[in-house]
Length: 160
Length: 111
Image (tube, rainbow over all chains, first blue to last red; front, side, top):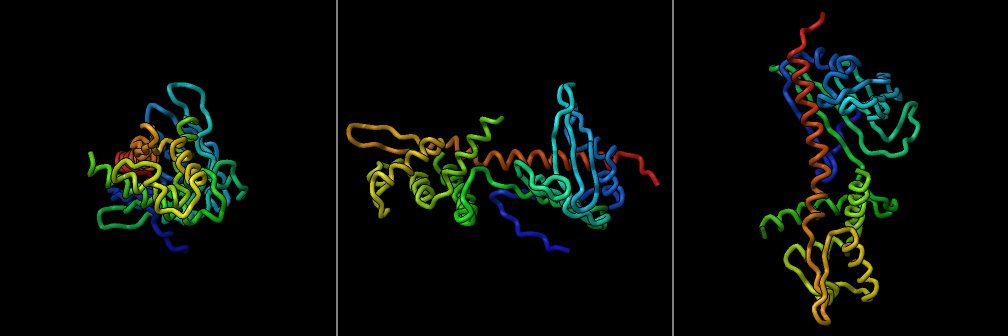
């Protein structure tokens, strides 16, 4: 199993939650399309799973309907890893069959672990940063702006 | 929404340069004139001005001219926006996890 990638505070988010239910129930809520549709988007919006092909390279396509309007594309992604009862990794950087997508934005790693109180559910979501930059600049850019924002925020808080 | 994300592109792109990051860091302490800002850099003024324009166009700073001196100051709205997009994504995922938790703990379990 790939180790968890390091957390990048500038463009990642991480959520960890203890869910009082067995791992199999959480897994089913995620991997059964009809169940998934019930919680993925906030009511009154509705979610429709068009494809949920749970295997590496499989399509993961959902639609959303807001304010009673027609269903429109929502998520158009590709599963990268599906490990029974343990882990789901998907990205919208690729579409089905690992074909590169038009507008990559994120990769999400969902993990489930047994916990005495139920299931430890975690989502690590890694985002592409906005803006075009050449490859050369990429690393410095990523290393740089997160800390700048943090520092600026600290300064601004102090001033105001 | 498209406009908002275009604006974010500009905000983050402006940060993709060490000179501009250094200028922002300097300005986070207090407003400063172009002369003061340019001083630490071994750079011709026209090149430095390009960086100032990028920061101004992307909304990071505001400049105003008094007599012969142009003063730059930080525009805090960009900071809020830069912090905001990740906060917004976090809110989406937090709420999503709430709903999953609710769904799983409320739904009668099938065998």
